Image (tube, rainbow, N blue to C red; front, side, top):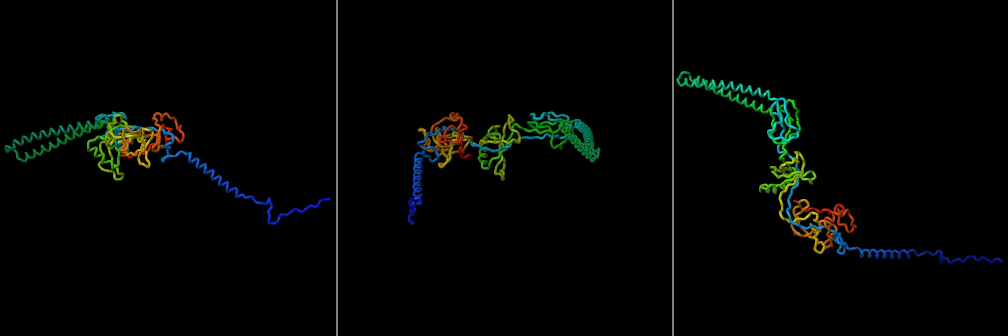
Length: 436
């Protein structure tokens, strides 16, 4: 017989089934977060404890590996006070050769671009009309001189007769006036002869200066006149030559004082880049007034220009040596640093460490600077590799030859001593200090 099926037993209304009971999720999330935070804190603390301590300047600490540097020994020497300016080459004499008379050009006695001396023949004009004029003037002079001589003979005779009361005094006075009139005519004739001689000389055009002949402005056979604008040719003096340049008015007193003391101030001309020297000269003088619009004054320097390296209207850079400081302490500008201590250098100590040494600078000339205080000759300062240094850091001295032998940046990032290692170990320069 079949057994009767019992109905399922129902749970009480207020009692949940084991399958329907919710899981406690919050009890798992909060402990997991706490554990993660603890692990992260331990890792951070471990890394902080093992990281090397950094110096105040971002360099290696005392326990780090020695930094590779290049030192330089501070020395004594002369250093100049230079003024730099932009100048324009100007000829001391430029002459446009023009004819003083009118006539046909029958000869040109120069080659374009050649050097001529004062008095050399440049060109020649047809002289036949002026030779005829001169001959005519001389003939007129001879005629009037004969008339004067006859009048003077008559005057002598009238003076004798007047002494004997043989002629009236009015006749004597008239003869005296006639002689004076003839003398004036003779003097005018002589002036006409001289004028004709001058015009005849003008048919031969001579160079008034020593210089270089330019391009010919007129061809042979042309009719030239004194009113021609372009003339025949231009002659420019190149030896010596001058350069005009300007400097600020603040430098005028120092320049004037040196010139009044009889000093010869050297001036050097460089090309546009300022790297190649063209010529050496001396300062000649300065202008009589200051330009109120720019606050500058114009100066002129002269150059022998024997090599003819300077040409008129050429732009050059001028370096004027105003004064020279003799036997002063100097060093390379590459070693100058600027920071919280002001202007300072890294001084190399005997125990292969460096120390910060504040310095006071003077004038700068090229890559050398005058040290007024802070260093003495014989001290060694860092000129390359100072970017990662700090006071008291250990160093490893290398020579400039070793630096140039490095083909490229082969050091690890934490040993790099600054930019510029790939181009021969030259450190980026700091400011060169105050200039005068």
